[in-house]
Length: 133
Image 1: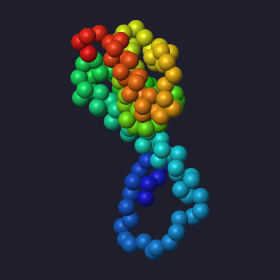
Image 2 (image 1 turned 180 degrees about the horizontal axis):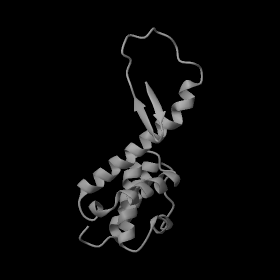
Image 3 (image 1 turned 30 degrees about the vertical axis):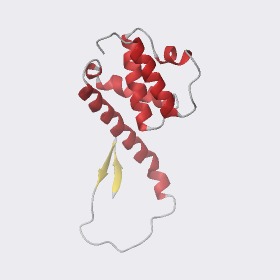
Image 4 (image 1 turned 135 degrees about the vertical axis):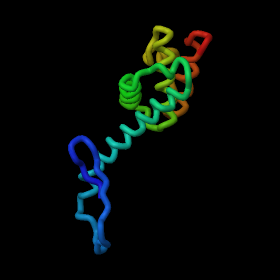
């Protein structure tokens, strides 16, 4: 069983076998936002660990900046994990070059597919970045 306890989800198991029965209607809908929030938090942490493993200049980004960038990228409409990863890295490179994501999107219209768009943004950011990156 997974249940909220304060700001965290707690997972417990039964001590004895439980009888088979269906969940009360609406139960899943009640907890769905908590599951989504927990998954998003875990994904942001995963992105931060991957950035640290990536090396310079990505490994110096503080966890709170990584979380904020992930949230900004998600709010901009990027949903696929690979797309979020590309755009977060693009944002970091753009910032190092004195630009931001809006500077990267101005050059030309991006494809509607978020993964293709993210790859273009990452390429543009790499072109702006100093040679050592």
